[in-house]
Length: 321
Image (tube, rainbow, N blue to C red; front, top):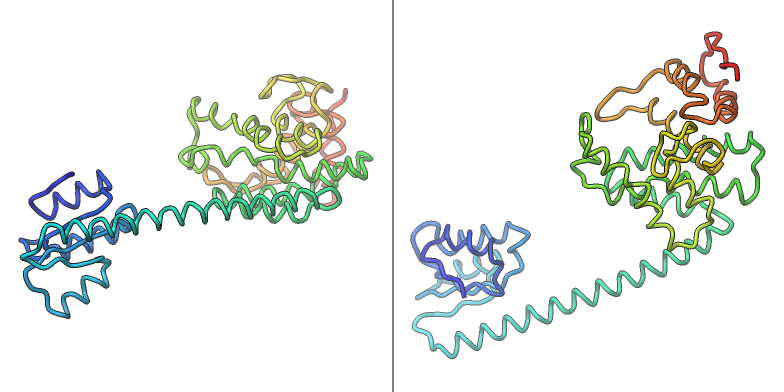
């Protein structure tokens, strides 16, 4: 049991200890019991703690005000000790039942959600639209830009893959992988994921774990291996300097090589909290420079052919070799 001899201390101890129940004098030096209750009712961590007032006399108006703020009961002085203990037991039992109900409801909601996910994954054998919307909504809870980015890269990845001759299930796997490529970011702390400004080396290392986190998340969804490969390897580089495994050349899965350049294009041409969007001309120059370094040279050429109708070429030439 924790006790306090004044309102401010009582509020402080309640916030620190989160007791199962609070018994408080209504009439005491400011802040009085009503102000203590009001303060605790405005704090989401203490709002659900059962609260009993003890007082000599309480008029109907005061009693109504206290109940509106969340008081559970009044014990009038002089009181019988057993009466107070009985009411404490009643409120504690009520709290126990309420919490048990909330746990059961949570389990039930998780069960319903699991059934919906299984149904959605089953539908993905022929269609990916449902997952697109589900993931967009989920990612937007953490980072709206990440969700919007996932939406944009699906269409562009589809166009590049088609131009490379992919069709049927292979094309579907590219689209699905593009949708879930950043799913691992749900495990990155907000302080890093949403940081406005350059990341430290330590923060960058944590951010890079999103590919492994993403693979861990989707491995249990029975998704095709090409999808898992894209999620895990889309930050590999043609010259072997990427992550997480430092794969090089054609050892990098095709799905990841296709998506890698789409991902960079969208990232550089989009506004970010830490920098403005680059012009498409500048990004094209960058992609050409990185062909054979960061990107598969053949896929770089195909990618630029896909977007040539949307940008000015300014007589840019592909590098030889």
